[in-house]
Image 1: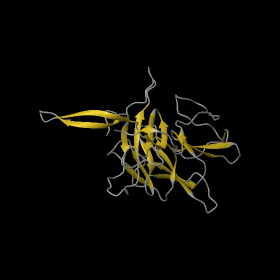
Image 2 (image 1 turned 90 degrees about the vertical axis):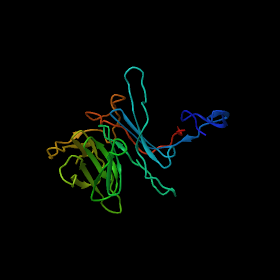
Image 3 (image 1 turned 120 degrees about the vertical axis):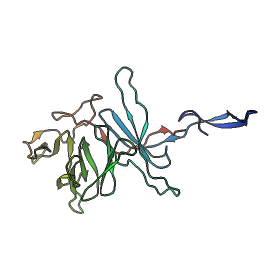
Image 4 (image 1 turned 135 degrees about the vertical axis):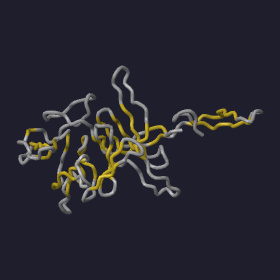
Length: 248
């Protein structure tokens, strides 16, 4: 059974006391079983990880990284977890999550996305079709597909969470590589090796800007390596396998 922390596991002996209470003592320590990670996302110091087996079903947890003084990973807290299920069919929460840089996290849900910062404050935004989150920054989320398949042309949707009304889709376009930073939407330019910047508040694209076809994307102030004019605000990584101690 577990003890006082995620790494404190042991075979324990429970002994009744004369006053009716219980004494618990460790008989044999047990190494903690490693957990595994799914989605990992970071923006503006907010780190979220989908932990696939530290809860009853895969769930999304967050920490805020502090770099002032002694660097710290911060306190772990829950963002989202699946509904309780008696047969293990409750699914998962946080698959494909993206940190938006404002303390919230977005992940696909049905034909659209769910955005939340903690349990109980989730908002679901619908989109015309399914897919995955391609990128996100603040109020804007690029959803759909980031590529064009040989089986047909897929669509990509720029969602504005603050757009009035029920329809939050600001822009619909053919799927391609895309990124959003602040209010600027970046897409491949007409000339190879260039990208086009579109101001999502005003609409018209600006002239293409030269950039490497494969810039390195990272999160300030941890690193800034990009061959364009400025680095996007967050590292985006596909699901990875790692280890994390199970909670007691």
